[in-house]
Length: 96
Image: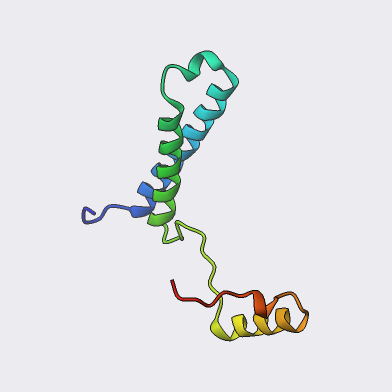
């Protein structure tokens, strides 16, 4: 980035691009004649990239992930086993 450039301004610009693209997509979906001018995948991609970049520049996650602590996983499995929700004999532990 250039020295002195406001990254939040760039994030706002990308967010605006995402909003304009999604608005354009909605309009084109309502008017089938306009769909032929610019391919819909291009509009979808611009919305995707704009959203991703605005989040990235704000330090926000660009993907939704979930992690489970090992101890929490053990508790979940123990509860499932106790409740009979898992058939231990049906679990295949053969290495691939």
